[in-house]
Amino acid sequence: MQRVALVAQPGIRSFDLAVITEVWGGPPGRVRPGVPAFELHRCAAGPDPLPLADGLTLTPDRGLDWLAEADLVVVPALTDPTAPTAGPVLEALREAHRRGTPIAALCAGAFVLAEAGLLDGRRAVTHWSLVAALKERHPAVLVEDAPLFVADGGLWTSAGVASGIDLCLHLVREAHGSEVAATVARTMVTGPFRTGATAQYLDRPVSAADRTADALAAVRARALGRLHEPPDVATLASWAGMSPRSFARHFRAETGTTPHRWLLDRRLDEARRLLERTDHPVAEVARRTGFGSEVTFRQHFSAVVGSGPRAYRQKSTSARTSARPTDSSS
Image (cartoon, rainbow, N blue to C red; front, side, top):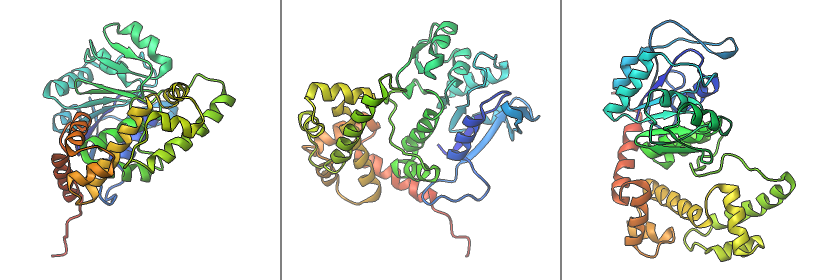
């Protein structure tokens, strides 16, 4: 996933444009150690500059035919989500999906995929304030209002604004590993670990939420230091000074997931890091991340990552090799 096509059309949001460019683009010759040299192109129906909001313009550098060359297609949101999308753009997206190219839509970009008919019968998410409008305009879409991002059938959609960053980093992580995603996140001065299940927003009184959030943050930090011997929910709750039932309720409201699921995801994150950065045998990686056996570790890892630990290590090694700058001195 090194060739990325940004679908450009009049009225796309400048924030989404900036996020996509920061993750996969940048100035010529940009070097980020360990990160592949991505090829990002802004693809449009014609070569003329496109008007954006706030007096900005964007000049495309490729036509829509370049989507056939891309490993990933990214669709920014339109400033006006209800604005119609040109027929050639919709057809180019349909054709990319038919080829099996992953397509990611940021925020209200879900409206564009829905207009193309790609989201019919599929799960999708958008900014929480636009959920009702998306449901009304496209009733065949299975619209959700809680997650930061979801995937269904090779189509990715994300919630509002900053969740577009989360989705882009997640796509980098899935294709190139957690170390590459973490490096990109560090250059953007943002955290790389918000999962798609994280809640979009918290509908709670602020004072109580602040006190609870502090306690839960302390518990999560403490748990991260004990991934080799993961505590159970009762222990986590005792650290927060809560009953297990109350703790689980507050934890889910804060993170969008259960304590058990959160802890399992963090252990698998650490397993990815160890597989990418060390030569530890798989059995040792399993031990260091708190799995009872190598078999159990392989089962959990494969279910979440989509490949076994050894295959993942081989893939990440190949990705690091391809990301190294070549020596042109000879």
